[in-house]
Length: 377
Image (cartoon, rainbow, N blue to C red):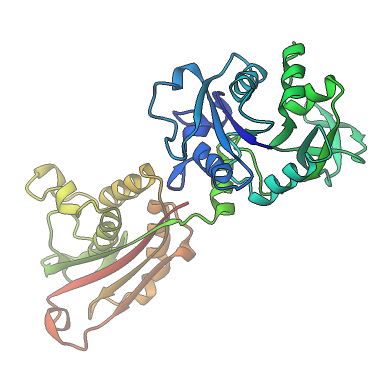
């Protein structure tokens, strides 16, 4: 007895957001649909794959060529798309498993249970019993309760013997939400098998992050280091990590010479692989003369955000004999937190001397080094 898996991928999935239909958006190293297809291609009980596509996608490079599948053009509704897949399987398979392309976490165990149930039933589908209390609501107010006894959340793949299901689809004119509804309307017996809480359907933008977590996909974690030095010159204050400190000399630089903030900024650029402050704000450009260093840091933070990263934490060490940093650490953390959009407990500012060795030990300037961690879920 041969079995075909029909992967329904003709929908547009607008609620999931993004520039592409949800089934073609990336989830790890491949698109959502490819994960679903691979689960069936790797299963020994599946003899062929049929991929049902939207007409606009057939000639595109959106859909995966690996694993190999027969391509079918879908219809205006899900039922019409499934019917197209059934026609393609007719004469080539005895049973079909119909699966939503937006369910990338289907497991071999679920497929096993559906196939086993088809040995004694006309249809079988996985489901998860409803365990939460159910409410009726209107205008954001609870209007009543719903007894959850005997209620299930339906999943796919939904399996059937092909001939009776094809006849049921041909006879059905309703816009059914799944194939169990079509089968039951035709009087077919459908068994419930155990589903899986992790067999989620991608529906909203947040589901991508949830699926990534369930799949154990590797997060993109980057670390960057920054180092900066400024010499002392005439003046009566220094800027360090966004705080103005009275001092008998000032740090010299094209901007306000905030050596700590410069090191943190370069650490972010480094983690992104995007150079340093000098590349983004050339010292040869007079518009940056005397500029406040928060401009540079805000730019680096914005670049990280644009690329989908969040800053997890930063650690900055100021290397100097004077001024004393300890009394100002809290203010520095607060200033950096406001600029970077971080909680203060994710920011470290500390100081050390060089035991009077080198240019910092001789009081000729201040050095700073910083480390930043960027995370993309």
